[in-house]
Length: 242
Length: 73
Picture 1 (spheres, rainbow over the protein chains, first blue to last red):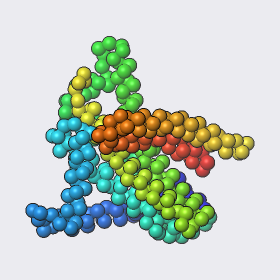
Picture 2 (picture 1 turned 180 degrees about the vertical axis):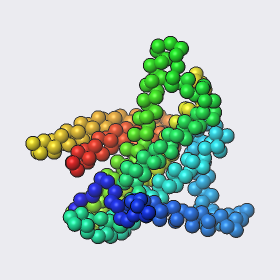
Picture 3 (picture 1 turned 30 degrees about the vertical axis):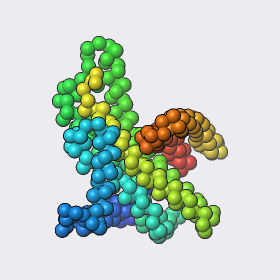
Picture 4 (picture 1 turned 45 degrees about the vertical axis):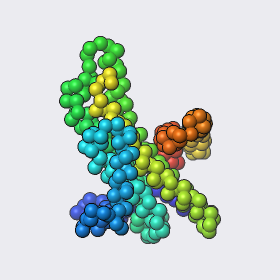
């Protein structure tokens, strides 16, 4: 029993390979879109049912984001990005725990190719989310401070000390890319491997606490991704010396 | 020697786990102490502890990802 680090290709669309993690991402996108459509048609002043549930989710997320961002106006500007990051990551993490993910598939020679697999167990997805996050942080900083004032934080010729600190800041921005993607990938992939190993050792009753752990970790990783993006946006949009 | 690959993976993940374990222990112990000093602020302290815990754990996760890649080679 072997869980591959790289995602397996299942079919090609116009000579572009589509992997099983991308298929899971499409399922998650369709599911979230259908839920959003059902929740927002016939919107009532006093919500009930699905609209009520989504209003609770959005209000809680907004409260958390505002607490970490500090400023209400900035939160309103960046909230669609932060809420989407959270909802997408938590939806794909939890979707990958359903039965059938990682177990239903076919054999290709020696390897077993599952049809569906957790989306964030693929470095491509987590790298994509990290790129979106880091680019949004840069855009946020440029929008708030202006292009030259923002880049003065990184490349400045005022004195040699500030120059080297700027270089280290630049490296730290690149490190954010790696840290975002590796953290999410490692957590979800390790969860997959753990569940596979436990299921192959003792398939009855013993996987239950590990499923609980995986649900918890899936939620926490989404929250941490959103909160780190929030904090970095807040740091990027404040003037130096505040 | 292909057997050295396993030794390398074990050293990598073992040393990462040592540092991460010590860090996480300090984080949780300090936040429990802070919560006992100020029980009203328990919600905020708990949130900060969770976030600090994830940040400290991600270093061990980087080492684990690299060790999986080393094993797969």
